[in-house]
Length: 77
Image (cartoon, rainbow, N blue to C red):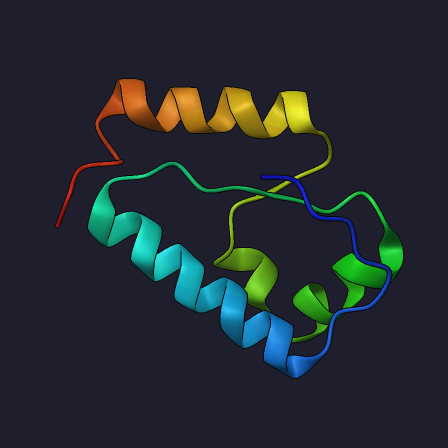
């Protein structure tokens, strides 16, 4: 699913963390394409950029998810 945003508030950041945890529990690939500075800035300011799987393009995100699957990182915990 693709969603585009111009602004990211604390509720959105909280939701992204919840989605990351859920995807890890269910063994589903998850990536965030953050090409817009306005969307990326809050993640960097809160250090979530070090936790959330960020990519600059959809192609890069797909490659990262595939790499995770191949290395076994997307196992159900």
